[in-house]
Image (tube, rainbow, N blue to C red; front, side):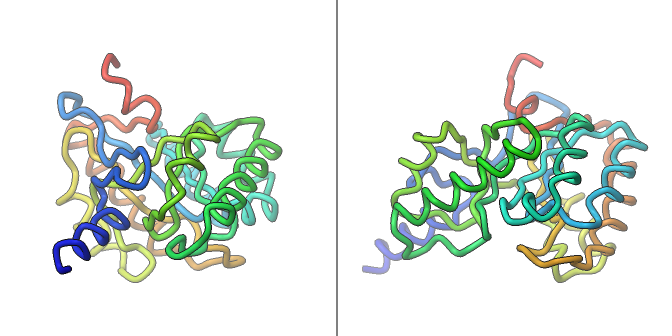
Length: 225
């Protein structure tokens, strides 16, 4: 019983798990590159992050919620126009556990549609809300042509100050790492992401000084670049 429960917990939340759908949590270890990713956007503060990233010529991947995209379609468009990858982060950011396959499909497909309408792009990558997968998600990803993307290190930026966020991500930085931050707070309007912004302000030059390249998820996962 304990072993079965542990296996279930791993399948639902384990960053390296692929039991409930295709998924990656890092890129090739042979590349001196990593991916900076942001969940829960777009938000009213996303443009400030875009300016910071542009200052250092850094490209990132933004996993966006459909509800936020419909609320701020212009900001979603700015992310795409700046050359960043856009991924799917569900429509309303619910927990997927104990939900039906039809519920999962509706959440993911509605986000796909919202992102495509606002940006002209159809996401190829999906990150589950809270990193929680569930039964039926594999089929949803197959139907919509989505690869699941988890993370190598997460900044816990919704509850930590900038110094702690940066320290966590610097410890997790390695070749092929996927780093997770948030440019929104689920589907909140005007969320306070000041600590995230300050963390990015400190983190990007620190990682560049260590010799890392920043790549989008699509480029990071390509072993020939």
